Length: 538
Image 1 (tube, helix red, strand yellow):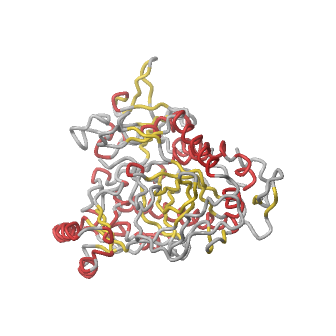
Image 2 (tube, rainbow, N blue to C red; image 1 turned 60 degrees about the vertical axis):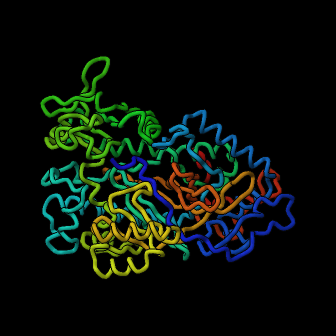
């Protein structure tokens, strides 16, 4: 079973500091004194001491606050997370498994024009991937035409032969997707990987926004940030739109969220989303199947379930069809699914499209189905089944990142620049023994962003996971989960290994020079979006 978080290692080259720390001239406080720039794209600064237009107000605000006040603000945010039970679980940790989710108070800001490009690119991508999944489970045209190797698909451990010929509502296999984006040194975005099975983390996106609005309410309103609070209702609308054709109450289908239980690392998210959507949170033991119809046990008797938002992996959803030792699933669930009496979101078998070897073919998949070039490119990827690729990678293991194709959360990986000779030799043997199971990518220099570290502002490396919903239409809430490698020198964004997250602000308009004013008589400037910002804090 894959780790439910699907969180991953941030792949980046150890930064070579090429400039001095950002000076804080003529200011009472020097919160940026230890801020360093390197070869990576910096989200806040164009050059040492020169913030980008969209960050100027935030930069001035941070400069005007003493370290003690910054520490108190972070402590207030941490207490808010504690009181609301915003936690995650670390498997196999002797000191305790449940922790408060680490958060950083300094928001990551994305311009309106940048978000528009991201939205177009991810809409294009999820559309093509759904067409691909429908094709490989039905006619297989892309395989017959040799665009994607047939053996690559049939050898994928997430390919489900049980799904062959099975139609799903609206022909949509992926209703919820979390695609990981990285910003490269030239400022452009690239897709690092797609998470199509049980993508997680959206609850932390919502929690970060809620906390930041409490800590910096005026700045949030004045910046003109697009709201994201409507995500749970957008998710519910997406799930309801997937109700099976024979649903007794198609206008009001019963939706439930299926969780593995309290021991799961994302259990907080399961409870949070169920509560926000106003649907039942159920475990496998709460459901039963009779005459190929799924029912939920309630205090008033059995109630039919029409749509299941599953946070349980394929292998564990039905012990009669998949893993017989599973106690997380529902016996007979797949038969009910195959009979068209219940919808599972996401569909069984979607994992074949986030196999890291299949990922390498996504640009060709987009061209094949949509006759378009990819709007957001992939990261360069080497397939170990290709002799030339494999030879190149084995000769340059010390500069490569090697990944197992079916793993997530940073498992089954080698980061060449930070590996030992013994580790590289072990991976060399694994690649040669099972080339299908590995791909390789160049070590990336990911963008960095300002983070609040013990009362000072320092740079840390980040990525971005926007969440895409696909039902009657494709929906992206403007923002996403910006994941951060919080400890100094850390290369890991995974929360279980010291990573955290921060709020992502998508501006309603792109700022231009002069779009600033003094607010409440303060001695710093604040950016004001040209459009109406009255409901920015909604």
